[in-house]
Length: 341
Image (cartoon, rainbow, N blue to C red):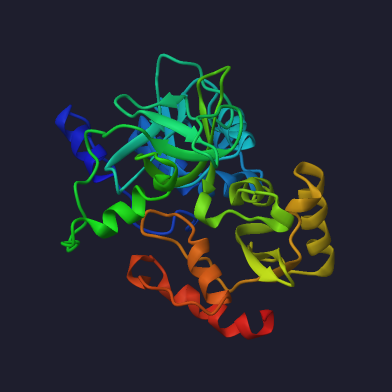
């Protein structure tokens, strides 16, 4: 995001940065600032939008947002309902867009294209100079189904090596180029599941492919669960993992509740019923557990870290805790893993 901000300065824009809890002293604090300072472009996250949705808040009714021309969302996957909420409850005549890329490529694979329509749940298209495709398990490009995000050609901002990786770029190649190597494809595999839509040209992101859940062999993206469950007014945040269990994979859900709510049996049943009705019975977790207030691990770029929790539950080492914004959150999972054996 540093590069975006510097580019904004280069064209004469004024940057407004906010450091602190976005929900304090009120969940609509950002919109108060937008009104006060006449902000025209607002950058935010799916988690924030879903949080406002869960509380059924209506920013447009409380604040004058006439200066606001664009909202850009990134960090995690936003549900189609999140897109509709923005236009219904924030502002109907703005340009809303979602972008996705990575620090590792210093850019975006897909994102905003102002001359194209916006479709709920979709990034508008693949970025310029990014030869992005979605590969199935045998490295065939596919559309209209979940598959691995790959980039088939070098991109302008891709790294040339890892810092300290002096052994002929071994770590770099293993991280991004080895996945399809055995079947003869030398492509950048990013580790995200996406759908490229043949009718719109848009792209839907379904979360990290290395965090995918496979109960009874059925592939489920974690975003499919988050997009539904984090719209409930009781749920402030959540994290789901797959645990090896009796020859299969069982889904475990950890929930952070909004103030004033408790994880009762009634709430657990509500969560399960909602997932069953809006997704499928396969998406329903076998266990639902409550986390403490700091219990959901995030990276500094505001992405949930299911992999670290999955490793802890399976008694594996977590190598790089320094990459987490809140590494102390992992202590909770280390304490309860014996109960989940």
